[in-house]
Amino acid sequence: MDDPALARAVARLHTAVVAHVPHVVEECLTAAVLALSRGAATRPALLPDPRERVDLAAMARARALLRQRFAENISADELARVAGCSRFTLYRGFRAAYGFAPSDYQRDLGLRRACALLTEGTAPSTAAAEAGFADQAHLTRWFTRTYGVTPAAYRTALHKDGHRSQSAARRFATGRTPPDTEPDARR
Image 1 (cartoon, helix red, strand yellow):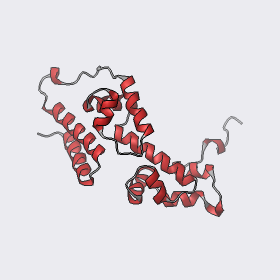
Image 2 (cartoon, one colour; image 1 turned 60 degrees about the vertical axis):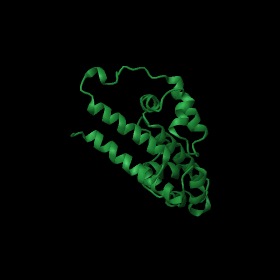
Image 3 (cartoon, helix red, strand yellow; image 1 turned 180 degrees about the vertical axis):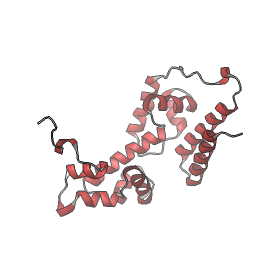
């Protein structure tokens, strides 16, 4: 079977299993099963209906749980139970509603919390623990992948000369000057 989408899904599943992150393994398994079922389906009637309605209230319940407990390890089964649907429906519906898989959304919340803590001057190791990462190395991998800089470098750049600079934080995180300091083209 020659299916690049299935190959990517299985590769992501393998990486998640090796890293042993339970909720990510569950989502990658769901994605691989969905890719396999799409690739193996021979009749259009077996394919999911793209017009399938997403239960936004159910997805909002799952999102609320992730927001409330983002620093905890929440299983796909627990999220599905809160949403009142299967894990497969949760995964498809959450992606359709928010553009993220639930684990990606949870990680994004953790990264945002880590940024806030680092901006306050918190040590990267403490920020990692409080933001729900396994350790400082785990935070550093995701922080660098997402923002292009290590948490320690981010914190150092914000606290030069012993004081915090919000505009420096925005410049550093986005790689550009924040809108409030750019020249106004209408003048």
